[in-house]
Image 1 (cartoon, one colour):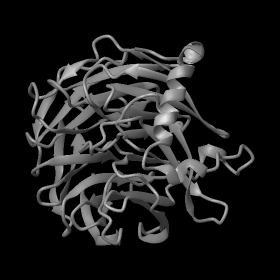
Image 2: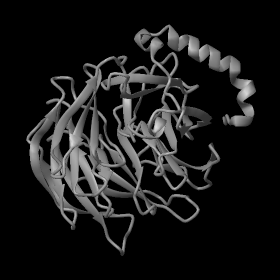
Image 3: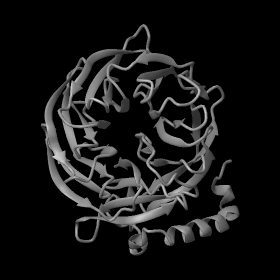
Image 4: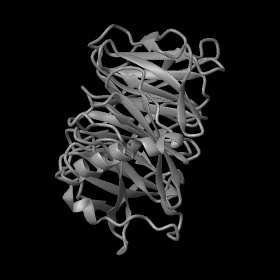
Length: 380
């Protein structure tokens, strides 16, 4: 299905139903949340953190940022016109911002769709709701208008789209399988910074899948690489196209490079470097490419690693920050690189930290008024 601005009048009833369902949810405390003002400095385009409720009765984007007192607060919520799963997705990348920061993409795992929002100074504007090209979407990635989604339902697959003025158009030849038909436990999909490779991690098979991307956005058959460690989960790229992958079982981090002769095949640089924490599952890199952080689920902590020019990683701080027992989930760094945020699903809450020149983290506030089941994190 495809919903775009020309179809707004057709969706008024559906929008009203979704809003009513959302208002009846456990998340009543957000009902009085003010909408962001266009006159606010930067508006919705800076200083905001985005997550999704993942509610099975009506998914919503939740926007957190500095409130009237300066403390983190829930500023707004926006129905996605889709349904969440009502349970954790076991993934990274359920919410993502486009490279230019002007579009937000979110998964609707319960209704097999992707919602696209324009990020404007005055707020978010729903532009389209599109079929995800598979069942139970859990992760989405964008590069220069090319969008790929990871579906873990049924046999599992990746599917590609082009963003055409807010509407997603399927890319012919983009639907590709995972390593097996079902049961692989995929965790994340992401397009590399050069736009020529797509990567998927599989938790259950301990495999990395890489797909060469053609100029038209179509994907080649998956190239299969054994993970350096057990249970590859979330990952991030640095600005030199190195791939940094968490490994949940031993709570380690591995790095890879893509050789010129085989751009779709990752080669190990650093193998399974310990965090000395528990269950490293999520990863994010600083925009300057100097540091990578892992979110460690069982120790409610964030580990900091340095990245050298070759892509090798070294542990800087095993517990650079913690969430006071709130758990650790998705991580996000603002585009300017000075603020890092983490989702703490046990509380549930969002914790934010200032990022120093040395990569050190300084507490910068938290917000604990989120509904149970929130997933995904993006920030600008």
